[in-house]
Amino acid sequence: MIKRLMEQIDKTKAPICVGLDPMLSYIPEHVTRKAFDEFGETLAGAAEAIWQFNKEIIDCTWDLIPSVKPQIAMYEQFGIEGLKAYQKTVDYCREKGLVVIGDAKRGDIGSTSAAYAAGHLGKVKVGKHSYAAFDTDFLTVNPYLGTDGVKPFVDACKENDKGIFVLVKTSNPSSGEFQDRLIDGRPLYELVAEKVVEWGQEVMEGDYSNVGAVVGATYPEMSRILRKLMPHTYFLVPGYGAQGGTAEDLKYCFNEDGFGAVVNSSRGIIAAYKKDAYAKFGPEHFGDASRQAVIDMAEDIRRVL
Amino acid sequence: MIKRLMEQIDKTKAPICVGLDPMLSYIPEHVTRKAFDEFGETLAGAAEAIWQFNKEIIDCTWDLIPSVKPQIAMYEQFGIEGLKAYQKTVDYCREKGLVVIGDAKRGDIGSTSAAYAAGHLGKVKVGKHSYAAFDTDFLTVNPYLGTDGVKPFVDACKENDKGIFVLVKTSNPSSGEFQDRLIDGRPLYELVAEKVVEWGQEVMEGDYSNVGAVVGATYPEMSRILRKLMPHTYFLVPGYGAQGGTAEDLKYCFNEDGFGAVVNSSRGIIAAYKKDAYAKFGPEHFGDASRQAVIDMAEDIRRVL
Image 1 (tube, rainbow over the protein chains, first blue to last red):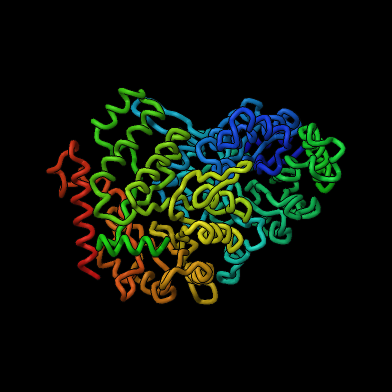
Image 2 (image 1 turned 135 degrees about the vertical axis):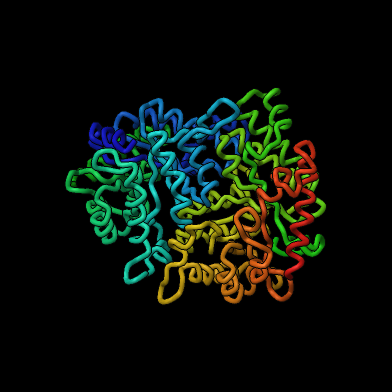
C-alpha cells in the first residue's frame, strides 16, 4: 500500500493529505440548511450535512491529491449516523482512487487490536463469509500498549496489502509530557521510533515500509532526528497550517529522494473559504476555495523540497 | 459517577465488572443459528447474534453486579451493524441500572478528544438540539498524547457527571515495553499515574475521583506501588481470570476501606459455559453458567479483601 501512496504522490507532485475532519461549524449554512430541511436537526441531519460537505470537497480536489485522512472522531461523535457518513466518505474516496488514511488512533491488547485491525484494515468472518467493515487503506495506531498491541495491525497490513501510521511524536502542545521524557538519555519517542522500524521490517515494499510513523510538523528539530533514525519509514505529518507548522518546518520530514512524508492539512483546506485569502470564493463555492488551498499548499511544500 | 459505581459495588458486595467482549466463537450455536436464519451470514446477522448473546448474559447477571464493560472493538469490527449492537447493549445495561464502562481507549489531540468525549460521555450539538450518541457512564482513555488530549474527557466528566479510566499499566504481556521504562529512576507508568491524580483533582466525588486508572491484575507488585501513589483513584483492573491474574494478585488494588478497585472479567464470565467447571450448564443455558461464574468470581475476590 505504501507503494501505491508513493505512486500517487509522484503523479500529483503533491505529498499531501486532505484531513476530512468536518466540524459542523466549518460547513456553510446552505449545506446544513438543506440537510436539516430533509432530516431535521438530528444526528441523521448532521451526518447528511457532513457527507454533502465532504463530497463537494472531494469532487473539487481529488484529481490534485494522493490521499485523504478522515478523522473518525468527528463522525463517531454523531453516533451510528455519523459513522455511516464516515463509511460513505471512505468508500467514495476509494472509488475516486484516493488512498484513505483512517485516523482512528486505535490500540489495545492483542486480541482486541486484532478486532480493530479486522474492522478497519481487513475482513471479519461471519460463518462462511468475510466482510470488510470500514475498508480504509491505512490506519493510525497508538503504541502505548507495546508490541503485542501493534502486531495484529502489522499482520493485517501483510495479509491485505494495507498500512499503518504509528504515533511517534504527535503535533499537540502537550505531546512532550510523556513522549519527550528521557529514558537512558533518549526521549521516549525515539524508543517508539525504533520499535516502529522493527515492526515495519516484515512489511517492506521497496524502499519503504507499510508501517509508517506519525511525526508532528510542529517539532521540526525532532523530525530531523527521527528522519535519520527511520530512513525507510514513511511519515504522516499533522500540524501543518492551522496548528502552526510551516513548510520550512517540514523539510526535515522528507528524505533526499523527495519521498518519505505525507503532510496533512485539515481545517486549512476544508474550511479554506473562511480564511481571508480565500474569502473571494464565498461559502457557496467552498469547494473551489478548498481546491485553491490544495494548490497553494502543494506549491508551498514543493518550494522547500 | 464514581459515587454511583461505589454504591452499586457496596450493594452487590461484588467489586466486579462483566466484560461484554463477545467473539462469535464464544456464542453458542443455537444463538448464532437463529440470528443467521433471520439475517443471513451477514454483518447484521453477526450483530444480532452478539446482541442476543449479551442480552441473555445481562438478564442472568444484572442483579449480582454493579457494572459492565463492553469492549467497543468487538462491535466495531462488524462495522455499522456491530456498533448498533454496541449501542443497544449500552442502552439495555443502563436501563437495568448497571454502570456502563465503554472500553474504547480513545485519545487524540485536544479538539479531537473533545469530539470523542462528546460522543461517548456527553452530548453533541446539532442546531438547537443536543444528542447523546453512545451514552456510556465511563470511558477508557489512552494518555500517550498528554494533558491536552485527556483534558476534554475530564471536562466531559465534570459537565455530565461521568467518569474515565486512563491507561496507566495495562495487563498485556508487552505492556512493559514502554510503560515500564525508567525516567529519572521511575517507570513511565508512575509518571502517568501522577498525571492521572492531577487530572482527577478537579472531579472528586467524596474520597474518590471520577478520573480512574486502568491497572492490570497481571502485575501485582506494580499495583501495590500504584495503590499508594494514587489513594483517591479508582482502579479498573483487567487481566483477572483468562489473562492469568488471580484473586491473590488483586488485593493490592484495593484500599483499606475495601473500595478502590473494580475487577473485570470478560471471557471467564461470558464464555463460562465452555469451561469444565461450568460445562454442566451446557450451551443452552450459557446465561446460567455466566451467573454461576459471577457468583464464584465475587466470592473469590471477597476472600482476599
